[in-house]
Image 1: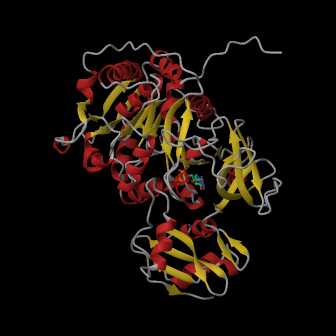
Image 2 (image 1 turned 90 degrees about the vertical axis):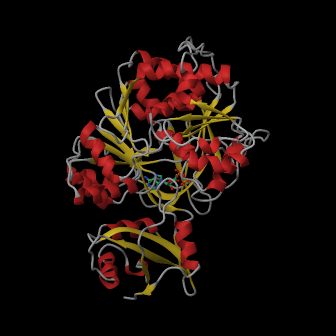
Image 3 (image 1 turned 120 degrees about the horizontal axis):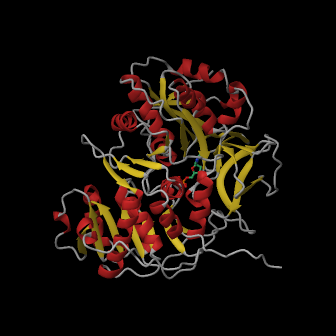
Amino acid sequence: MLSTMQDVQLTVTRILKHGMTIHGRSQVTTWTGEAEPHRRSFAEIGARAGRLAHALRDELGVQQDDRVATLMWNNAEHVEAYFAIPSMGAVLHTLNLRLPPEQLVFIVNHAADKVVIANGTLLPLLVPLLPHLPTIEHVVVAGPGDRSGLEGLNVRVHDYEELLAGRSEAYPWPELDERQAAAMCYTSGTTGDPKGVVYSHRSIYLHSMQVNMAESMGLTDADTTLVVVPQFHVNAWGLPHATFMTGINMLMPDRFLQPGPIADMIVAEQPTHAAAVPTIWQGLLAELSANPRDISCMKQVTIGGSACPPSLMEAYDRLGVRLCHAWGMTETSPLGTMAHPPAGLGADEEWPYRITQGRFPAGVEARLIGPGGDVLPWDGESAGELEVRGTWIAGSYYGGASGEPHRPEDKFSADGWLKTGDVGVISTDGYLTLTDRAKDVIKSGGEWISSVELENALMAHPEVAEAAVVAVPDDKWGERPLATVVLAEGATVDYNSLRSFLGESIAKWQLPERWALVPAVPKTSVGKFDKKVIRKQYADGELEVTLVEG
Ligand code: ADP
């Protein structure tokens, strides 16, 4: 028997219409680096999204399913593109501006993007690529920047504001099928080639509702979220869509992503929430210890993308800012888990929950698969690869303009679950603790050593600014850990003391013998430790390694 309920399609258009009317007064504030930031209301953003859609259709000939790329910072214009492109039935493709040029070329050609909307300040990155991007017919330039490099290239160039000027803001948004493609994002290729994940209107709608639930980010129109996580990094973790559902104000850093300006914008605009990867919060912490400022307006910060060292959480607790750990992937939209402790616990009892990756929302099912392929119990001890499924989890990768979607065996199980490549345990009450990425686990003499556990323990040392641990080949044990350490300014600690410090919390057989001081840990395009690079530096003999044995 079928239900008697209406069958309304869950689309980005509905989110847009809702945000621009019901929450029309909420604001997107974009940092300009000048005395005053730029402010635009949701109502204005909605109106301008209508004009942008007109321009894209009437002037540039964008049709249903055409891919429109963005190469932009987090700002109001990028939010307009977020809503206009999917709502008109085209597909928003956010480009990661920190990728190496050859990967950007691969991605744009694979997606066969027709248009790219770029911030003027990013043209030096885009212009040299354009001769290798045959599908791009139009470049739309938003904001300041030298445009002369575009002259003489085989593309039509438009100014964003001129394109919008004089056009109607009333766009006849089409009725879309909720399963249609709305946006796409390529994995950042931390491990392997970038792969295209295509989000549907439905997946974005449902994911946005989850972001807004109290058990996730749970913000309201009384809040302002500082969206540091780039709009090209898994849709800024879903925030731009989620904010239009509930009227949360957005504070956008544009290109001012250094710790100093981030601290300034927090003090000036008093956001109540923020979202970014651990590297950003590490950098801000160093800035605040040099130039103290009060950032306690931020009641909650969502931190994820890589493991948050517990020492970082403690440091922010002392500043009156609560970091809440979240786990996710490009393939999971990205909200997979969030680490809110169960209700009714005291601070000490909450701690063991806060340092986990968190628990799964109702929309995400999880299982752990053991080395033999068996499903493991949730007992807090049995470690296996995490697999997930749900309404905002990818079921395949984009196959290119003429190809079929593909489901590589190492990424999808035969029964359709996403293999995350992350290894961990789940407690009896459903909290996930990740010990490593399967590819980063150190396999020493048949036992596994968690690189993340060693890193977290090292970063708890007051004289260590950052530490990354990777597996390196070892004649006797197969693999052993190599610790690369960035010392805090003025630190004098030596390897022996660091090793003894680790020995206080880590079993002796797991302690690294190989140590190297480095000026900085290499980072990926989204700010994660780039272990591929560290392993290569070691293999190429580029690190000055000292052997320390207990
Ligand atoms: P890429 O896979 O290219 O790095 P993603 O942003 O999709 O790009 O990365 C997803 C991966 O990031 C996860 O599979 C996991 O390994 C890691 N990750 C994300 N959040 C966390 C977290 N809170 N703790 C540990 N690892 C995390």
